[in-house]
Image 1 (cartoon, rainbow, N blue to C red):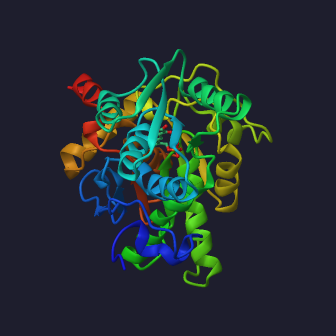
Image 2 (cartoon, helix red, strand yellow):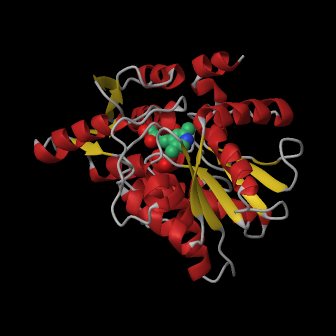
Length: 337
Ligand SMILES: Cc1ncc(COP(=O)(O)O)c(/C=C/C(=O)C(=O)O)c1O
């Protein structure tokens, strides 16, 4: 029985015992207390410590396990890079084909290298992630290409794996934080983490729920706009731009789940500038030793803004989700220095 990681919580995943996991011991990631970058009870959940260097491995281990179990030949994803890297690695481990559809010129080098390395077929589209996702949808749903199982995060199996972040935080802190701060792109992760906390609460294992704080880059903040204007429909961003290429997304497919998570948890959405993101990359690395790719540092930038805006205060216990490793995007890192 696995003692660490996603499959430690197998009984809380809707997967019957006869299914053999496709796993690389993902999850069980470090929860690191911040001592100098901020004062307060702030921890970083360092998802860069996963096998392919991002939280995507938690969802992919479950998604690819199911894909293999139902006997598909291969999987397909649209991605800003980390989903592609993770799908390529887990598909390789499962002996499945993998097609990744990427926005041409919009993917950090480390993620492109991983997709190539693990043998994925790379399809590039002009435009941004949303155009890549549209392409996958057209191919698989409209043109009925059934031999490739779509594994983007509208696929609920992915979120089942990602909800284990909540389980590990409660296991390790043995209390529920006041707030969880999550960088938001396609909005699967914030939705999944909230689902995990709600399940623990419904099982009677915890007696309080954290506030979910979603953070987006100012140039790619459809959920911040939708939230601030109390819109019932998603206010899409046609041409999203941010230096944090992982969250350069204008039409988050999980937007409704994320809005509900933030509403139910008495949380909020916050936008931060690219500058604030890059400063947070530097501070996490040079004050705390934690090396993350830009999108991950949006959680620290968002926390700082939440304190400035009085949304959070210093004696709140807070966990920042640092979603991807610094090695993913060396080009952007060298732009900072
Ligand atoms: C480092 C990093 N930080 C945050 C996010 C946002 O998570 P979601 O809000 O669940 O999308 C992503 C997402 C990446 C992709 O969507 C993809 O890889 O296609 C990421 O790679």
